[in-house]
Image (cartoon, rainbow, N blue to C red; front, side, top):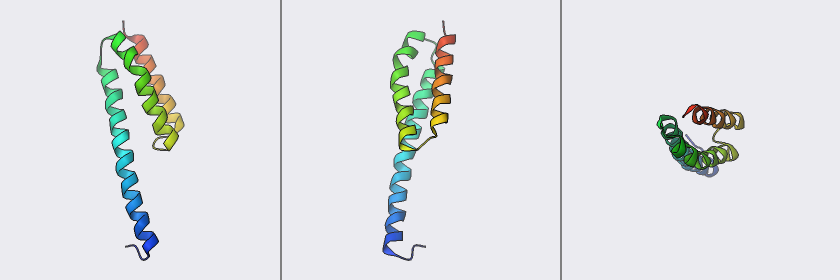
Length: 84
């Protein structure tokens, strides 16, 4: 339990940030899943830049590690290249 006013404020801030990060991470995961389940190469190529931007933003604000972001983008591109 928080003993000081600043500790109570930190708890409130952490909860707000956690929900914010969770929302954007989940939204990005859904976008990645949408690309990986599509069989249309043109649609996947059209959506890829938006998803890459989402992933880069998560890495920039520290929700995911930059190497994880790179791995995710690489995996998406590999999937798109395999589509015919």
